[in-house]
Image (cartoon, rainbow, N blue to C red; front, side, top):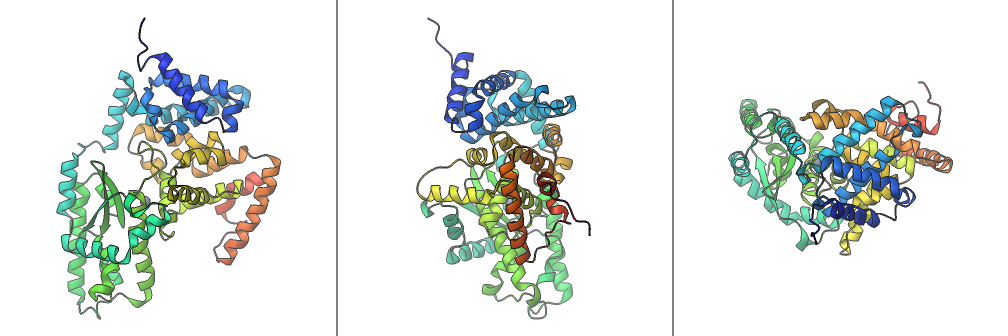
Length: 451
Ligand SMILES: [Zn+2]
């Protein structure tokens, strides 16, 4: 009797069905089981997806979301041909990007190589050893040691880990690097007179950091983008690394090294620098990225939330605020719940919670959507095509609106009033003349005032 191979269609279908059964708590899966199974099978066959693909629950949930959307993408749903084409294109691109590491298909491998070539900015990707070599070259060892000492003494990472529900013995080890690179504007936050520095000296120091920053930008992958960030986190050979530019490290160490900061910007600068450090630490602990392509907005929102919301990421924050107004559940609530479950030794999959809260069809869209700047500057044609066919944050908010029933619309209006009241108390400018709420006001049928 022939043995059933692990990649045989029978085995694969069994594997996918088992995954679908695990998601049966979702109303969409219960009500459309047959259609989702058929559509998912079509995707599995088209991309020749291997059974291991389903080993990860986040991947499985995003995949099932795409399969559900595929089953819903038809003329009978009242969609125009253009809409159908664009949706099918999104589903195809997203499935490729999600499953590219789990397919033997020659065509998929060819596309994958093309994708990684474009991702690397058409240059040779560095090996892990070469990346580390560049990073070590720009690491200021004494400053790094000082900052490590301060983080330990003040229990900065422990405090964030606790918020994340991660016990101290379960923290993924982090390698810290203070990079001696900058923009050339570093002197502005220091009180030069009190620090006994002349302008030319400060200028030389800042220019030195800038010159090294420019060199780093050429030597490291995405260096031109990273050099502009206050900090970034990076995985090399499975190890977690956090990088901080020299200036925020100096600001954080100012008090203990007796360096004076300008009084009028001192508090803000300290909060920002500490926020950046914590933000990168959150990224280094059990991030929500899937195949390095999905969950980017979600992961930034998570990093901001658990680091005290001191950074920017305005587009991501607005997007999740609008989803929160429409559904009554803010994504940070789900993140808190996940942290609580983790603290009790459990495991809660955030993508599954997104499906329960915002609907199965929304998961892949929430996982894929990114700020407009990424759509315009996506490195690879595949990512660009996926994001273009998906649309902007506002387009995804509109999709969310289509799923609401009358009762939910009424509740969303109450939520809107509540949000506007509480924003007013925080003296944030949010009103019905503001573009901030535009898609939500349209969905809820609230007339927009003209100022
Ligand atoms: Zn980040």
